[in-house]
Length: 433
Image 1 (cartoon, rainbow, N blue to C red):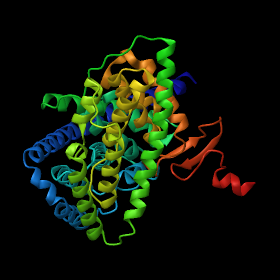
Image 2: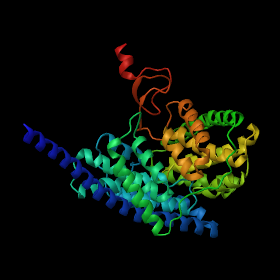
Image 3: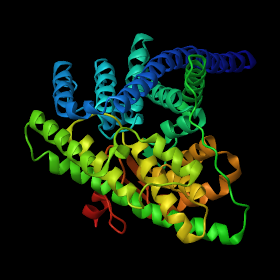
Image 4: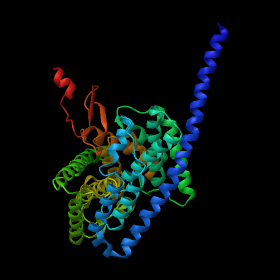
């Protein structure tokens, strides 16, 4: 009996030791690859952005570059693939083609080169998820472990670009299904994120950090931050509605070639009308809003939303999260003085709260704010993010994302974002009634 129990215990501990060894090796390898590719991507975006600043005429090449992007996606048979497919790879075990990596890399670089309004994290999640899954297949991981490897790749690439390993880890394991944390992926994702972060630092990528003055804690400031959080929830809803609405509207142009050309022309016209502040990622505008409390015009957040919606709906590549940073920061900077808050602090709160509202990830958003702005404002960031999450409804950037529990009561609903509204029963329950 004792021998049998000993053997069972040894087998059990052997399984734990094997799992630890497996993910230490696999996640570290994923982190190294994502760190290297992420560094190349970071410097690529940086250099083409600088080139566009020195040579404004490249803006007029945007429609032609769009045609190149469409052609390359068709050549690599990756047209139609995006961040939702990465989420499906975790939900359903969907296979990701390796050619998605060069497609989104090239597409995002070209979009930034010619002034399309887009971010980097969409590319980060797609490239990271693809690297993670493909390396998992190289390591002969089974279907369940491939999903964990996909999450580890997402966390690693996000961490390499932004220098926020903890937020990247929590975001990756929470964004798939709101209400469930993929705890099994916690160690692999964190290790991959830390390794990728270390690699990017070693190769010269400076982590994204902002200097912002945090007000002393008081009841009055908490109330003002709460009001700002509520307003950011409204902005987050607007962001998602406009992004998805533009996508549906642009799809009425059946030809992807004509669609991307029209979108390119529209961005050129908007740039001539409103200036170049809204081209590219716009991190310089975010920095000015947070560190200096400066925003060019109070409606800058609406213009960035318009630029981004047209760019991505037309078929250019990039991401929506950095534009959400821009929208949140400029909105918070403009509104904060009206609430009696410092403009720079309001920009920091707005960035975190709008990001939370569009991704439905309050914990990751709070941690992101801490890594970007420092821990001194933790409680303020947490309050704004919680309110933005609760009041932003069931909208979201990623339609493949599922929300398992109601935002209004302790009720299991299991619905996709953008397909459910507060007060409605899920389809299954409605049919049962």
